[in-house]
Length: 299
Image 1: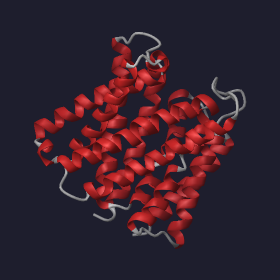
Image 2: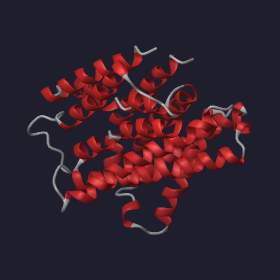
Image 3: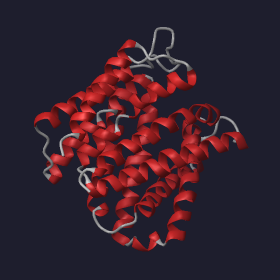
Image 4: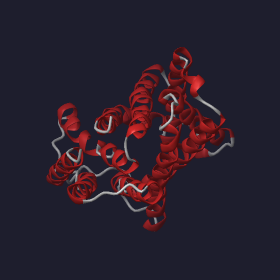
């Protein structure tokens, strides 16, 4: 199974890329936090239904429940919240570049905690992949396509700190679940625990009366359908594939390969929205493809 997890991680990235195209309208309608809360609600129902019907819930014990719950709080709740705050300060592009450093954090933590080493062509592949993703994100827009958020809102340093915090939370959460996933725990049930914990935390924000947690507009059935489909692809299938990949693969390599979703979005935008990527995006995509090939070829 040493080879297959590469494709599990890449499949997760593909799920996130497709799901990201489904999220824009719903996120604008509900607001970022309300969108995340509804998404967590939907995916929690889906995953627990599968876990109960398949009997996978029986693989959970107190220790695995605790680890998955804490991982969900750190990676999904705190990490996503920090990323949204960074986007508000810096804009989506610069926040995306900072979040892409989670692959580097994961590789470093994998080395420090599990002794995972990366050398030779694989190291070159990792550098090309991360650099390519960052290039595609930062230079991927044409002039005149500037997002409404792409402006400085005060000092950039708090936004930089929040972006790096979101990346670090993602890496730490991934690192935490690696030892547990190497056992017999059902990945769907494990993912259900992580998602439902994050949902309860999001719900607590709403109950506390925080303005940012309140929806911009009431949800309707078309928006709910988009949220549910996004939840199924991104959080249900995508995150479960990541947990399954961690059962067989190294933390750093799983993080590296699953970070290519911003590059996979580019041809989808061109195909569906007729938006041809800018030159910088092509350069970043080329570097990412070469880096991915070098990583996959290491076996």
